[in-house]
Image (cartoon, rainbow, N blue to C red; front, side, top):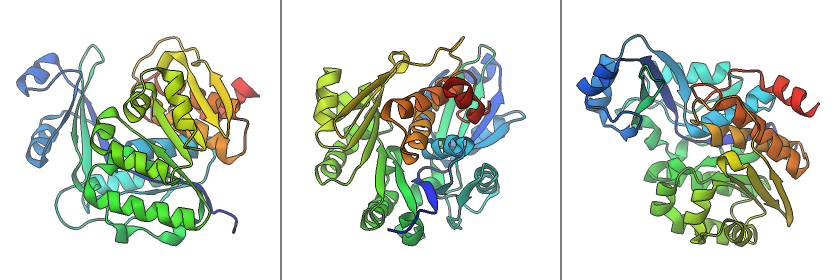
Amino acid sequence: MSEPVYDVIAIGNAIVDVMAPCEDADIERLGLAKGGMTLVDTARAQELYDAMGPAREISGGSAANTLAGLAALGAKCAFIGQVADDQLGEVFAHDIRAGGIDFQTPTRADEPPTARCLIFVSPDGQRTMNTFLGASQFLPAEALDDAQIASASVLYLEGYLWDPEEPRKAMRRAIAAARSAGRKVAFTLSDAFVISRHGDDFRALIADGQIDILFANEHELAALTGVEDFHAGLEQLAAKVPTVVVTRSENGAHAISDGEHAHVPAEPIDKVIDTTGAGDLFAAGFLYGYVRNKPLAESLTLGAICAAEIISHYGARPEANLQDLVTKRLG
């Protein structure tokens, strides 16, 4: 097997987060569900975008957030995701490349426009999110470079993107390319609602030995296994997947890898500001340890350090220097 070019290559939703302050009166006037997340169509997305004040735009999406954390730690990464040939598509591409992540997916010329999450931040700090998935749901299998996928130690797949048919086919092709090259396949379950729609697919991938590393939180674990007892569900899944990593919010994280068990507590922080992206950054820290053959507990601790940084501020991208945090904590 040739030496990998990348530590991790990921496939996920290519979304631009557009964040702007607002007043409570704006939330009411626009008919938004304060503090919630609503999926919106093209027309509604444009209406809300036009209604926003001066905004901060930064590329987002679950798998892209994970890569941002990995790149900040010093890993070499590449991202595959679909944007349109428009302004926000340029924002996404610039942002992710500026973070040191290779991004070569061709833009899509047709409608719909680039995905965006329009986030209204009210005076009390609550984030009201309106997500338009747009072009991200139309990633074709033909956009993949099998040789590029085969050149990464780990292929990381975002469960959210399993929902639309076109990228689901792309991810199946990517799994085949990675496995034929002897690389590892990591999968994040993303959300219990994704499992409710595609749990049979996920269970089939696991039964067929297609997944090497599985990320979940405790609610997703229960949804996938149908087992309410946390430890029993973890053991059941670990019998089928070589490495299982499950987060439990303030109760830390557990992993079982080839029969080895590890648990770490959550890293202490002064105040939880925003939990958006916590799971994404936990995966970043863990994978960074994994590709460097760190002990299982240390990989979990790396995940916990990254998750603690992300929940200490608004937004799903690191603001502090993750390498410095790791050095301070682990030496």
